[in-house]
Length: 119
Image (cartoon, rainbow, N blue to C red; front, top):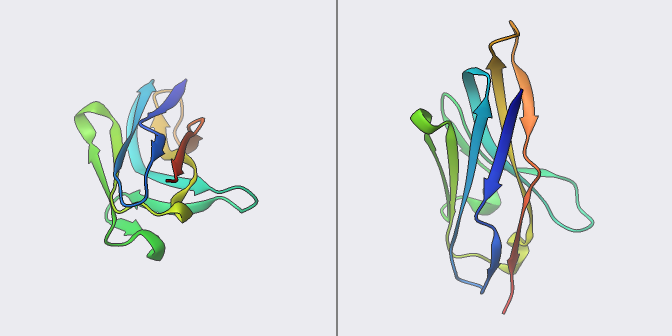
């Protein structure tokens, strides 16, 4: 079994910063990609940032958010600066992982952490 556990969400004022963390644990053989998605009320889930062979960002967060990984800890981070009210959403960790019991990559999701940007 593989689990993704997020932390770091909360309430922040516009212009503020938050750092999200997501740690993968369990029977991990290798991790291909790790990333972050978000879902705002009434909207579909969307990609925020992903880290694999390269990194990619949604246009709406470029220049404000930074994704990074600590491979030794199987952890991905999302540093969010200059936060705007429209960044308010539940943020989900996503990873493509091969475990010790499979010969193919599976997709995993965390349970989500809420980020609210409001004055």
